[in-house]
Length: 365
Ligand SMILES: NC(=O)c1ccc[n+]([C@@H]2O[C@H](COP(=O)([O-])OP(=O)(O)OC[C@H]3O[C@@H](n4cnc5c(N)ncnc54)[C@H](O)[C@@H]3O)[C@@H](O)[C@H]2O)c1
Ligand SMILES: [Zn+2]
Image (cartoon, rainbow, N blue to C red):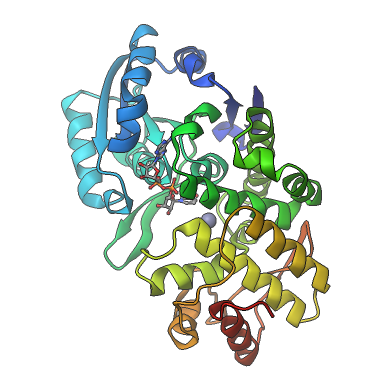
């Protein structure tokens, strides 16, 4: 069992990580003085696997519990589904002393968190993230949102949970492709902030792929710690938090230009990290071995380096439209060595073109 505290003044909270730790959810919530009614939000895949179990745990701990399960997938992160949740919340008489619990991946976490942030101007929010991506990324940092037809995550808030409970055993039912997608974000943490973590991935990649509990707990703990530290320095995303965007500039372009269907987020980020590493090398910021180490670990975790289905001219406009673009210039997060990144907003277009050509051709430079 590991604990990570996220220190944000009155919004501080603890992330509990461990094998089988969900069994103590009732106790943990009571300790936080969360009592009264609970609305659990989940999706149909996750609620089939863990819904009854979590409902029972909380009922036994004295809570009045209801479970609301949405259809799996990004489409549920919508105002329409949020509205259904408000209706259920009103019908079950949730008040300011009640809680909303997210039981699922990032979709459920973002949706439930958005409802928790806005219903009655905010009630207690608890995260039980069940995908690796949600465990190391979306459940830490307090960004909650729903999508708009015209763009992802456009309607949202910064809203911190009171408690995060990460049971790594829940990853046993996660499809492999989703596991790899989460690993992509974990690699990112190594690259941006921690060479020791990066080396740990190299040394333990076999154990990670078979979900060895001690190793998994350690990487999740470390990733949460890194994200927490970044968020503590920059809760509302002005500058420091930008480094979390490593690999995401190209990733967003790949995802958007392929209609969010061909690659999942983690796969797009893997390609984007490789592209960002190539770009860093091209600009003379890092040595060639940094690119090699990054591409090696991406491949070890069964993630792609290339997006041969994408075209340079289709990707380029999406780079400019990226929400991290400031004053018309794309802000690139670049790597100088593993564990160290820099922001550069002055990359000439011909160089970006050259990099995009490399990541859309299935051949290593
Ligand atoms: N708030 C943030 O800071 C932040 C950060 C990163 C991503 N996100 C958001 O997260 C979302 C993606 O999250 P995700 O990758 O977790 O996707 P997801 O929530 O869609 O989950 C992926 C799939 O795995 C299934 N699943 C989840 N847990 C399972 C388990 N334990 N066993 C079996 N199946 C399981 C789900 O039903 C779903 O089909 C996106 O909407 C993205 O915008 C938010
Ligand atoms: Zn991401």
